[in-house]
Length: 103
Length: 335
Image (tube, rainbow over all chains, first blue to last red; front, top):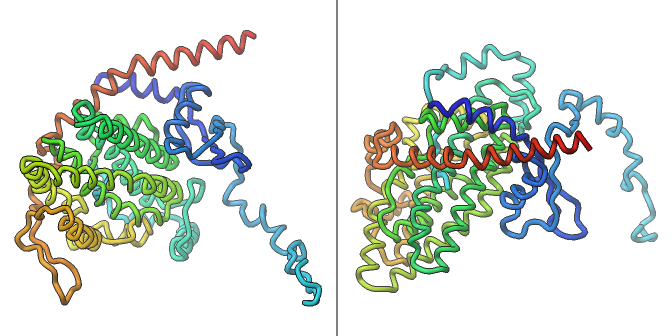
């Protein structure tokens, strides 16, 4: 197909965006997926059409995917381990007499 | 609106997955298998065997293509819907299918393929999509039957995919399944309305059911004994229920619905089997199925041509959006 090169060039220049939706006032924005769009405004409109067709959101954030820095899964043990032996950070670590009731 | 457990090989590379697995590093393979065995989820950044990645890219992209091509048979009826109410319903449904396609393309992209590659594969005819969309929608009743039976079969197939071992695919399927129920109910209700109408309308429903029933049964894919990839897909937690089991579930669920609707399913062998506690049903014409998968269906060429034309006609919109984005960038840099 002679349109092949055109197609590839055009779309590959539409960057990828990550979409975060706040489902209702008072709740946090939550990641819900990604999409391609030419610019930020376009990404917002696309996100509205793709992710909020049934009133799933009252607010949308879009962020260029390449602006996200993620922890590496291979570092999981070292990166998150320091928290695993600190059980005294949890309320259940402490024994309180029953008669104290809810605390 | 996808039903087929497709994952049909495309092109040449169809090496045995065992051979490929043997080449993978043992320690990484052990970690991967442990995750699968404990019903864990694999995420894009995790290591995965190449064969797992390839299988998923093929299945998810075929699934995405099916959603996109799936808009065409019903899209034909948007301008001919019998009332404004039915028209807005149909537009909403077709828009959902586009959305489902986008969720799925995004999920496939997390595996390292690009949108361009996938679209190019579809537009060049190399990629497969669910062959149910290569049959024509002759009457308004066909639109109702697609909702009731085709989307009903899709739901059967997609619910187990919500537990797929690949995280992005599973999450996309959860979103899709939430929306799919509306598709089936609107179709069934449209048929109920027609069945309360004139004899001609009732005949129209019956004829549409006659045309689609066997195609829908075939959509679950070849019988288990002829599905060599099923065992591997199940081992990997991509597939949870076999083709034949899903097909049986679909038949068992549909027979009572057909009775309430007041139509006859076109199968003389369809009857309740007390021993099996399931409905028995007749033989599916697999030659016809494979002919359609391989491009010989009544609408294969038309569907692909319509899809390619839509893409090409939209080129100026994509160009304009890009030109605008570039201009804004230049102004921002200048400011």
